[in-house]
Amino acid sequence: MTTTPTAGPTTAVAARATELSKTYGQGETRVVALDRVSVDFRQAEFTAIMGPSGSGKSTLMHCVAGLDTFSSGSVRIGDTELGSLKDKQLTKLRRDKIGFIFQAFNLLPTLTALENITLPMDIAGRKPDKAWLDRVIDMVGLSGRLSHRPSQLSGGQQQRVAVARALASRPDIIFGDEPTGNLDSRSGAEVLGFLRNSVRELGQTVVMVTHDPVAAAYSDRVVFLADGRIVDEMHAPTADAVLDLMKQFDAKGRTS
Ligand SMILES: Nc1ncnc2c1ncn2[C@@H]1O[C@H](COP(=O)(O)OP(=O)(O)OP(=O)(O)O)[C@@H](O)[C@H]1O
Ligand SMILES: [Mg+2]
Image (tube, rainbow, N blue to C red; front, side, top):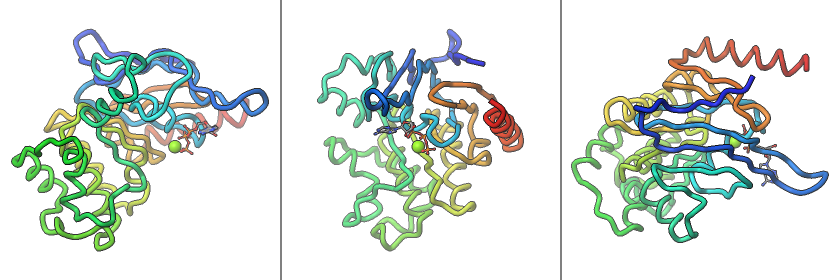
C-alpha cells in the first residue's frame, strides 16, 4: 500500500517533499534511502515519523530540513524551493526558518544554558524577543538553571535547553530526530508535552522522528516509513493503535 499524504486546499503547508529520492553509493553498495517520497507537513501540526531502523526517517528529515542533499524530487519550506537555493541562501534559510532538536543535544559546553538558548539568534545578529524568551524558558521549566553549564545539568534539563533553543527564535518549523531518545520516561514526557503545547498553544509546526509509540501518541499524525517509502499514515494516534500497526508491519516483514 502506498499513500501520498497531502494537505487539503485550506491548510497551509510548512514543508513539502515531492517525489523525493535519495540514494547513497554506486553499483553493489547502492542504497536507496528514500524512494519517491511525497509528504506535506502542515502548519501548526505535530507530525511523528516512524519506521524500522534504516527505513529512511533521518534521511527524510535531513533532506526536508536542508541539512542534506537529495538525488531527485523537490523540497519546499514555506514557499521556497530548496533546490533553487545557493549554499549561502540555504544556510540563511536554515538559520532563520528552522529549529533543530537532535538526540545528542549539541549544546556548547562552555556556554551557560541561557547562552546556549540564544546562540542561534546571537550568530544571526538578531535580538531575542524578551517576552517570548521568558515564556519559552518558563514553559520548559529552566528559570532556575539559566546560568548553569550543560555539564551541571541533567540529561532531561539539557534536552529542555535544546528544545528552548529550537523554539526561542520562533522558527517556521522544528525538526527533532528522536528528541527524547536519551531521556527517562518522565523527562521525555515533559519534553513531549512541551512540544505538543507549543503546537496547540503557539501554533508551532513540529516534525519528530521517534521509535516510541508513547512519544508518537503526543503527535497529531504519524507517518510510517519502510524501505524508503511512506507505507501508512495515522491521525490522532494512540500508543496502542501505533503499537498495533507496528506489529502488523513486523508480521508482514516476516512473511514477505
Ligand atoms: N552516509 C551514508 N552512506 C551510505 N548509506 C547511508 C548513509 N546514511 C544512511 N545510509 C543508509 O540509508 C538508509 C536510511 O538511513 P536512515 O539513517 O535514514 O535510517 P533511519 O530510519 O533514520 O534509521 P534509525 O532508526 O536506525 O536511525 C539505511 O539503509 C542506511 O544504511
Ligand atoms: Mg535515524
